[in-house]
Image 1 (cartoon, one colour):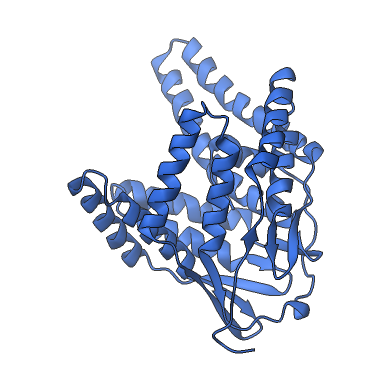
Image 2: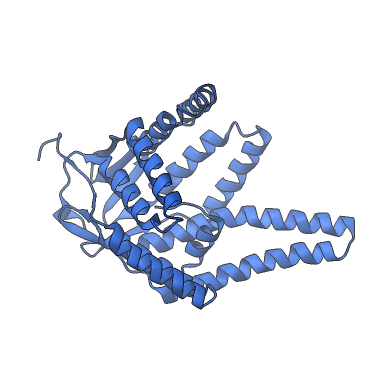
Length: 317
């Protein structure tokens, strides 16, 4: 195979089919007072995976509503515990106890973020496969938690400036511990470059009254994608973005219009358009022997992190 060889994931989902899943999910979630939500999420993920194709084979999501329901209940229990501490402290009407309760609530909420990211990555990757080969995440929860706490404190002490370096360090850690069978990954971004790119994007977006935001979004997407490396043995395969500012404008403008004009009913079509845009603009360059990829990852069925991440609204691929 030649070095200029390139490949990508293709998304074949259709708005009409996703709409059927979407409506059933909404109705059953309403009828069950929210209890059906884990099954709804599992159904959505299953469809999105099965409509995504790489090298002639579709991806598979093996997670179940039952697994995600158990995680859902655990996640709700954790949040209820935090809110009980907060409201219980406030009910004492003692300023000192109230302040302690507020501090415990926010510190607990902050600590939930890295725990949710770690748990969601372990669950989602182990439940994702292609040609029977599972993805995996080998990060250590304690190590990731410590890194997150230190990064958060430095970001706070630097009034947010360290945030750019912090984001890159998180991405480096995650990709370093990602696996797709015998395939490994890395992330090559640098905090300084990410900082200046965002500073430029922010300033130009203000100056142009928001017009530059589409170029900023394009640059962000490219920086996230172009710094990913996939390794098969000693062979590195870089990821490459082909997204344009015009493409972003068309995607966002049309999606906003169809969602607003349809009062939200066209959301499935917006999701399909977003998935097609993302996959059509990510290329993997270089030689890859798909038949040499071997299984190395074990199953992991605890979906608590997945549900925590969803409740905190942390976006994970």
